[in-house]
Length: 82
Image 1: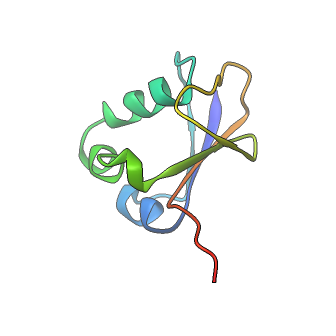
Image 2 (image 1 turned 45 degrees about the vertical axis):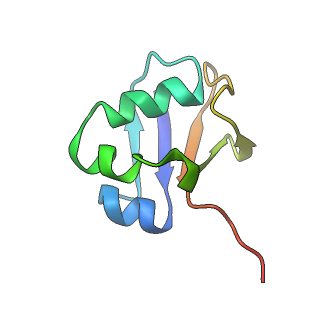
């Protein structure tokens, strides 16, 4: 079980700030595909992966990042400075 945190417009589109998810995924990319497979709001929020970023246990992650021992996955829009 992994805790998933959603931030900014990703949270707004999915409709919840966090949830516990049971997963068989081995990587961030596989996990995101599982979420998109839920359809509806998940598919809409995660349809353009170039517009979202991920962190695994508070470390920025790529699609190929392993998640087998992860406790937390965060999904958020790209950060900008200013």
